[in-house]
Length: 190
Image (cartoon, rainbow, N blue to C red; front, side, top):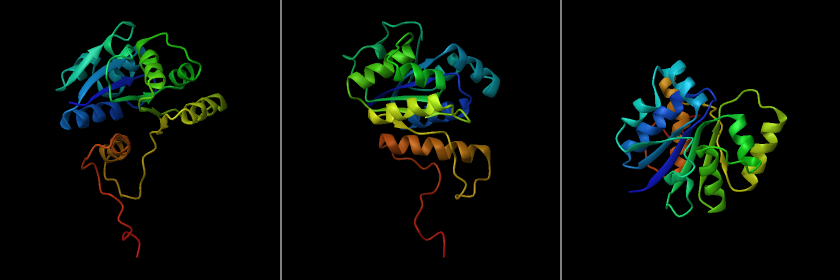
């Protein structure tokens, strides 16, 4: 089965991560989950969940963010994708500077050095210039920078619809078929 590392950091947006994990599970992906301390705080504040709760989703294995010897820290582990959702400005800045002081940043740098797909989903607002510069640097290195900016042209009826819009963009980047919302046909405007 295909395998992905999903990291949750301290930016707000735990709903995006939880929905992404469920969609990846439904698509039968193996998921290595890493949650920073700040990510765990947001999980609790926003969803009343813990990292262990997320690890109960089928296919999800929780890795310790402090364990730099974990599987996702190794370039020899054949992992297909790396996704940081949500990605804090601090995490993005560390990656752009080559700092691998925890498992989230180490696994992202492994993705870069091994030329594997890395998607970062920033949820900060507004962005500081340094964050924009660091996202540009990552983009220039081939990282997909996919801000958690939901669209409204599909007439969302709930927060879940807005979350699905962003998660659908992530799944599209990974080439995963899904039914999270309608696709634009070009016939919506007459």
